[in-house]
Image (cartoon, rainbow, N blue to C red; front, side, top):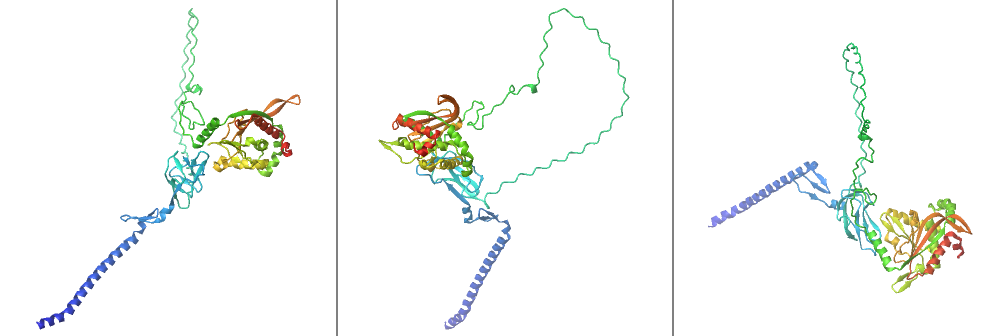
Length: 474
């Protein structure tokens, strides 16, 4: 037994060493196999680099999964509705572009039409519109997503140059003249046959009238030719007589204008009084100072500044016309903010010129020029039209002879200017021809009596016909 134990004891280290060597050899084989596999994978990855394609910040290859990165997320941005003023809660979307259009930075992509103005939605950077999240005409609120804009490398690509005209093919060379056939000797002409004797006239009634010749189709005038009528492209610009109809949704600004005008009729006790103004002095003053005024201020002097200043002077003389009814109280304002009605393609807007009582003609013209430019560009804001104590509407620029304007709520009166026409009037007992203008004042008779209204118009008439009374304080 002891001999067996001694033999096993002598063989144990050798067996343990053998087992350890076998385990190490197995791990070495596995490691070598793993290294060979990674070496082949790396070799295949490097050799297939030319087949890789970069799309939106991700790599793709045939037989491989996409390796996405976050770089593509920075190229797209969702543009939301800009914040509205406090008095506006929502608006209607009006498209000016479509999916796939290329836009530049600050280019207006959409417009949000509110009941007071149109809020532009510009592009924050140059790129391509990939998705539109709303429909044309939908009502949207501040902060709502509108469209997805994707940035392109180097901004929006430049417009493609016009294709060069293709050269016209050269005219083929003239074909050589064909060989003429051998001419035959001319044949002698045969003598003409003898003329037959004229028939004897037969006694009968008058001969029938000759038939009218049929005119060729080309000789028929265009008015008589058949015309094919097609509906107009824009029903607001033309009527072609096709007896078709088109329904267009009324924009929010027009809806608000209609509601306010109807509100003015339902709430105010409107009454209109008229007067006429001799425009000779104003026209002479404008003609004499036009060149110097334009040279100094860069704009022309017009009649609106003259009437705006005269209205402010008359409002200071009759403060009740500058007041307003609120509930059971009368609110008198110690400032004159005059709203000037301006017609734009989107509707009638009334930007406000503030503190007119302290302005001169030049200040008024500069303020009106700035507001008119903003209105033409569609950049007029709600703040530009907020407030106002009195309104002037100039229908004379369209040739109006006379009219009755409607009060602009919540104001109490509005002045209507009309066209200038030469008419005979009596001056110092003589009939003379003078350029005359009718003016109209529509006022709320609940607050303004007839006396104040007439005195107000007479003060405007005096200030326009003789501006020196404003300097004298008369």
